[in-house]
Image (cartoon, rainbow, N blue to C red; front, side, top):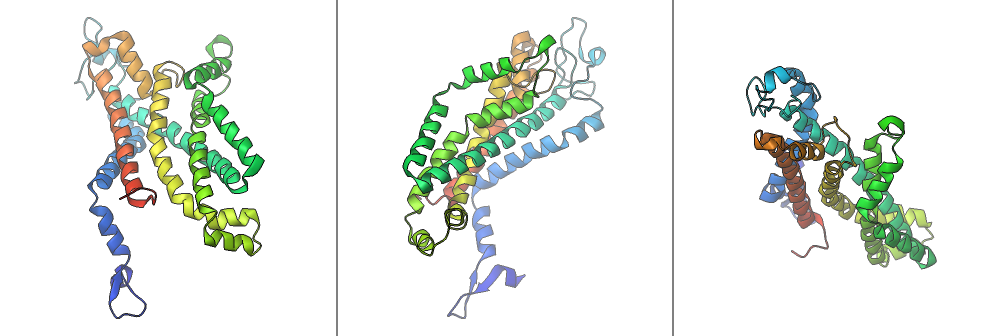
Length: 313
């Protein structure tokens, strides 16, 4: 145990703390702990949604009108085994909120990851080689930034419609593609600027002078040094993309009912106005969305302040 926490320093008899010291420093950061706890709760909710549904016996799209609707047809707020009550169709709000976390993360994480990979390739290529290639990739980035998000999303969704209300491609895949299309540009600019700054460093010039091919210099000298910044920005961009998915679903161009999504749940509560008699129809998905975005924002900010060398402390 002592060997893991202490490592002898060269030229002295006193051991120097290594792993244990770093862990203790991280545990002293309240923002980092708070963000990690909130994100952990959201991830746990998403992972255990099927288990909770199986234990309670309520599926996300199952309807229980006899137990959840009163004599006037209005949904109950709680009781009869429905902790958060039910919506206008007699579906369990709690279960649908938990499944909404799965949808948001299943879209936000792949979309942000794809955007990060595409942006990193574009930024590394343009930043390292420069010249006309860099100018062309920069113009491509500017063109992508010029497209209006909502108009493009509406156009893509319209093109994805088939006959009789069907879709040609799974809506989840379409939403992931739309969000990634508008996210990679930010990663590309970040990576390009980082490469321009680091490629003039002595260790990079030494590798180039030694005859290393460009791909080797990029992968072994440049990428490892900017990878922490890219990963931190991934955590910064993720909550933005989760909000984008919820916004698209709220406007009816994202996840289609009856698949539970926080955006569609909020839209349904407002369209039917049933949140006036059953406020948890609106509070549950909106609160879950707020908590998720808050957790990732707090965690990413704490990580950036701790590990990003460009942040002035």
